Image 1: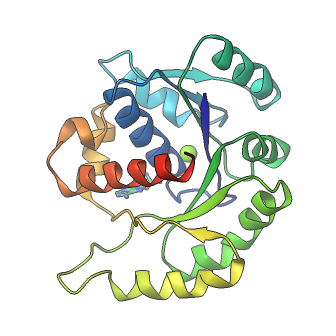
Image 2: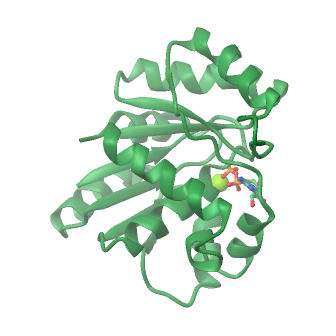
Image 3: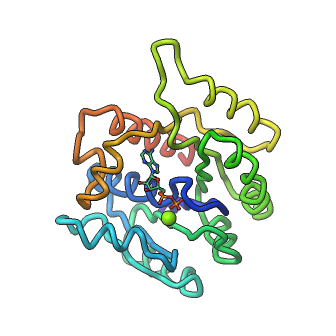
Length: 210
Ligand SMILES: Nc1ncnc2c1ncn2[C@@H]1O[C@H](COP(=O)(O)OP(=O)(O)O)[C@@H](O)[C@H]1O
Ligand SMILES: [Mg+2]
């Protein structure tokens, strides 16, 4: 079993959005996927209430039950465990990062988000498990390549000594529309640009942990 944790101290960076999208895509590819929602706000669980499909499995767990839930998933033959954490997740966030094959720290490419990322980076570095920053909700690329603010964000983030995912996820209306309908963009608009980015991100993740 491979575990992917989404972690960021700041709220609204895209932890749940990416957790749900990556979990759905991996399930579409035939993997047995469990999304473990340890955020007391239960955004992933709420999304699942609107969903027509029973895959991926969404399981709510308290932070205290994280380790037990991980063990259970491994015993049950789960291929991919995606752990969606709360902002300021505290020790649970640390555990989720420590036990992950990869932790993704989503950040928007804006000043305040970049300023706030240090605390998240400290956590993933302190557990010395594989981790990477992923830029989310970015202005879409143009025919000249990535938007200026995205390139600037990459540059500003190099000082943290953490890998920055080469795939940036754009802010796209399809993401919100898909989530409202209990779907992910790879279902809602499989040929769309948003879906293409999620597929590219998943492909990169799989390369990272093989
Ligand atoms: N790439 C994106 N495109 C469009 N909307 C996005 C994107 N990423 C996040 N959002 C929106 O931003 C809000 C916060 O995202 P969310 O995933 O809930 O953040 P977190 O889980 O880190 O608190 C949500 O309304 C979500 O739909
Ligand atoms: Mg969330």
